[in-house]
Structure formats: structure tokens, C-alpha cells
View 1 (tube, rainbow, N blue to C red):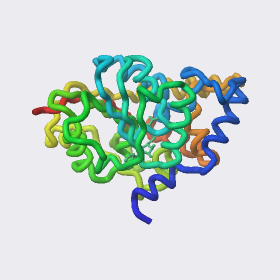
View 2: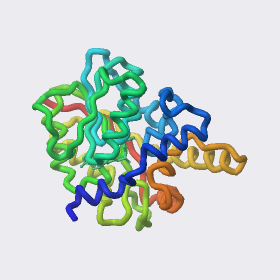
View 3: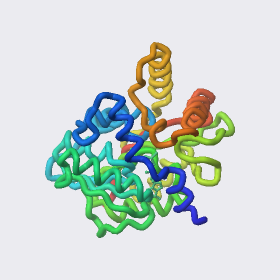
Length: 277
Ligand SMILES: C[S@@+](CC[C@H](N)C(=O)[O-])C[C@H]1O[C@@H](n2cnc3c(N)ncnc32)[C@H](O)[C@@H]1O
């Protein structure tokens, strides 16, 4: 099986929309009329969910007339959030067909189809013209991409000179081996972690000037502790996307990524850079 197919298989269940609708009903939400806030526990599929999207957005300077690219857009929570918060147009691209289908459905339900466009495709060969976008972000996607140099070069190609690039990723730490499954990979075969230093160097070599790099391990660990305390009190934790998307393997995937963060095997980072001319 090709690498792209293995990655898409990891994220596909064939029953995602039914499972989401069931979860929304359990939350007391009409699945045909959810709000952005009611979907947020499920459609921000990265560490700390909406909390992380919110913090990332606060670091970006986006104008309503900007065209923003979301690379590896998942089921579209971050893209809809950015369009709603800034009034900008967001184009998302994702490898997983089922995610693109669910993203189209939810975007239409929220009436954001004029602001958010989702396309199926690979981050390594995007169907966009050179210098199309004013900015791009990619949240928890690069861990599935082996050829980082090709990824950064493709981002550089589609961004306008001076455009910003925000990457959030789970980086390789110095604490030893990662156990699988994790939320991003079922085995080491599709997990391609880069160290923070290698990411910084790779971006610079591709023509990006690094403006800021932030390690969010402390926030991730605190969020995990708060969520576990809520579960112990019989409450629903704020971020439920991994359980929705990964079903049976979710408990092991979450425990493995939590342990990896605690031991320093992985470190979540956010890197803001600017595309040089
Ligand atoms: C952990 S999910 C994050 C989804 C989304 N960024 C979010 O935060 O809600 C990783 C996503 O990356 C996508 N992905 C992985 N490799 C990709 C590639 N080469 N090109 C496009 N999308 C990719 C997967 O299909 C999946 O939707």
C-alpha cells in the first residue's frame, strides 16, 4: 500500500458522519443545526483542540480580504473557525476523502461555504497556483509527511512573498521511543517526527525566516490533567475528537501520546515564519 493510502486509512472509518451525529445527539445538539461552538469538541483534531486553535489564531494577523491556506484541514474545524473569526477566505486541503466529505457537509450546515473551500489532495503537490495565499497554517499534519524538504518547498511555492506560515506539530524530543498507536499514526511506518532544530533548519533552507518558536508541552500536560479530572467527576472533557475519529484505539493512542509528552519523547511546538521573496 502506498504511504498516502496508509495515512488516509489511519484516519478513515467509513462511519464518521454517523458517529459525529450520534455524539451530537448525546450532547443534546440537533445534528442538522449545530453551532460552531457545539462542533468544537469534535472538529479541531489536534492537541488541546479549540484551545490551541484559539491561541494560534491570536498570534496571526489576518485581514478579511486575505486568502488563507489550511494544509491537512481534517474535518474543517480550524478552517471554519478562522473564516468566522477573521472574515477571511480559507482553502483547506486534505488527503483523507472521508474527512473532506464531512468537512463539506459541516461547512454547508454552518452556512460558511462562501468562505471555506475544502479540496482533496496531497500537501506535497497542491493544486494551487504559485503565490496564491496571504498565509498558511498546518496543525498536526507534518508528522505524517516523510519528505519535509518537499513539504516546505511546496508551501513556499503557493505562498506570496512576505506571507506568514504557522506550523503546529508534534516534534521529536530526546526522551526515547514513542509507543504506538498515537493519534497521528498506527505504527512507526507513517510517523515522521522531526526535531524542533531540524524543522527550523528545514524551513530556513526552503526560504522561510523564523519569527517565533514556542514549546507547548506545559500547556499540553496541564490540559491533559484538567481533562482527566473532568472525566473523574463524570463530566465530558473539552476535546473529544480523538475518541470520535479513532474509536477503539483512542484510549491507547491518547495514553501513548500523553506518556510521550511526559517523558519528553515528543514535544508539541508552534513555529511562525515568513516566506522570503
Ligand atoms: C491529526 S489530523 C489534523 C486535522 C486538522 N489539521 C485539525 O487540526 O483539525 C491530520 C490530518 O492531516 C492529513 N494529512 C496527512 N498527510 C497529509 C498530506 N500529505 N497531505 C494532505 N493532508 C495530509 C490527514 O488526512 C488528517 O486529516
